[in-house]
Length: 137
Image (tube, rainbow, N blue to C red; front, side, top):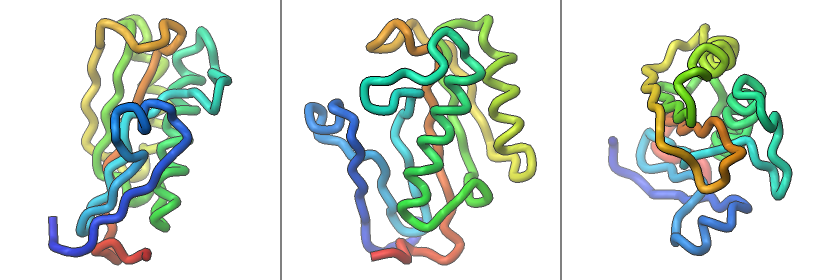
């Protein structure tokens, strides 16, 4: 990472307060978005549907990137966490629809579970800010 200001953005996730973390952080020419699920407030989008949860989670992560003036074209890495190996194809289809044109490096992990058993998918996103470092205030 290049040197420059570090900027943190908070979200509305209650874990941020209890863990002392940020929704997203810009440091130099990189923006990192924390683990994101399909929750919006108390509503879980796509309950029981890994494709819809992946779409919603990535949509939320991209909204966090937008706080820094960045979009899907700046994404260089994604991580997809799944509760079940059976959901690989559904999550992969959602990922491809969003990122096929930019083709970020991607890591896919099957985990033991999430803090809410209804969550099937969580994602992380890392972006490169070509106009950086941390060009926004």
